[in-house]
Image 1 (cartoon, each protein chain N blue to C red):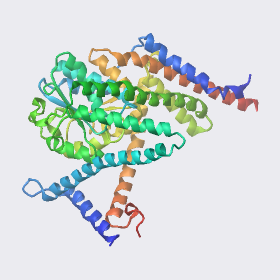
Image 2: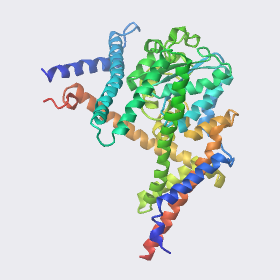
Image 3: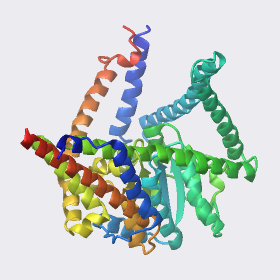
Image 4: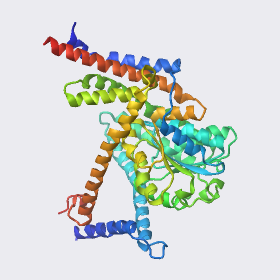
Length: 216
Length: 271
């Protein structure tokens, strides 16, 4: 039963959502399956909201243990837990109308701490990419050469300075992105969609059982 | 000449040159001329054709990491909409999104625009693709209170909004998933909404098939898209200045690639 019940639930729920998209009500009104599919999709949203809470509990459990046992790096764990508590308290107070002070504080904390930190972390990538491009982009063979020239042309075409050097760089970059890239992306997307459909069908029919967590 | 050494320049030298190339133009803009592409013109024309009093939806699906590339687009389009008298409603399927909505709103509140009349921030809806689907087909049913805890039904801007077809346009400012692809799959396809996109630069190639197919009517590509939009709308702003930094950054990377390849070939020839 531990295997059959989840398989039946998966099949029934999957078929409701699938058929709701295929069939419509004869009178043009709301089809009963569409209503059920809507309800089921709402459940996904509710479960996702719970997942956020579960993640917080998990963080407290793991990092609370590190702090309690004073394991190496416990100060980092303590900082993380303190940040969660401070941001959660201020955020909840701001959200539920505790006054303009909390709203201002919430926004200022975000604008002055989280926003610049996040942007800085991402900006560091530019340095790694510059270093990696210099080391990896070598014309070792035909394929590498094609990739190298395409990358340089797109870089020059996208930056205003490229246009200053030669006014045809943007047209070439646009062509590369619009034609060869779109063709390749479309092929990947269609392939992935067919693969996704086949996997979904296997799950619905109970052939693929990985989602059951290894229950045999 | 030591070609081996030229193939292996200390990364710190690359980092220092890249810092200089990006920081100097930010302090002292070079004013490199910027041309505007057809996609941005199309985007602008669609937005400019929306009559005053209509409403558009901004789906702010990005976090601080992607914000330097995407947020300037939202700023530029917001400015255009406010100047035209078009209402803007914000929603987000990324938890960081509502804070960017507040950033966009506050500047206009200080100028006398009214929350709930000219704009509203509906906050964050968890659930990724499923949430986008349900929000797309039933806006009021999914969000009962906005980010400031007001009942959504009490906001004048939300009157007459049942589903996303009631917005003159939906613009997904996206730095990844959930974002443009989910909006196309779950809302644009079934409901036929007027969907536009503002994408982080690295995602642009991925979204091109949707633009090509007409599912996404027009797209702004990264910071350059924002800079072009500012230029087309006659309000050159901070994004245009930042493009100088991007230009010099690209030049530095290209210069290092060329140096690396010359050294590689000379070394090979020597051997």
